[in-house]
Image 1 (tube, rainbow, N blue to C red):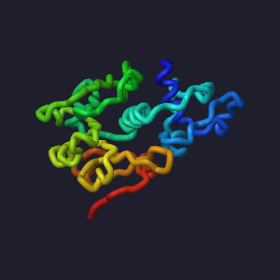
Image 2: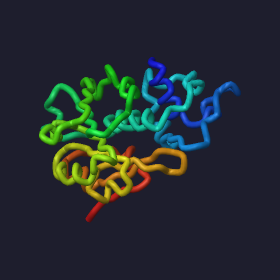
Image 3: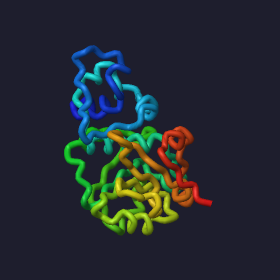
Image 4: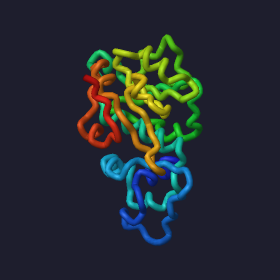
Length: 209
């Protein structure tokens, strides 16, 4: 398991005390740091990714936690058959998205037995080849949401109010933690099914009419 992966998933573990670690575990920094809500972290204890010693890893950065969220969203979303006929899944990133080396943790990862491809700086003509796309705030996420309306592409952004602009999932800061909200109407319009588990963990759900 890579050092970057350890750091990211240690952040998902929550506090070290909940993991039975000793006093040598570093305390989480109090300034601007991000972590998923506690229940989400428990749900994401995937085999081989979470070991008891991970609490000893350093706290992950904001970018690393976002990358981990994006990968795990794949685990709780079902795409229509028309979008899963390919022999792989595709995570796309808009032009200004810069997760740096944290994307290395996704190398060799699979989703439901299929390889996960990462496409950086996705072009407009290729948008609908994505299964999930992260849109940086600098790339006008609302424009992407309108372009993808009705398609089976799950759009994710950390822009404030993204789900109100037609985006599927918005990453939001909840205190010093990272949480998310879901536009269920958008997901349904694209025939993508978000699991009940994920819906329960959302900070807010926009269900529409």
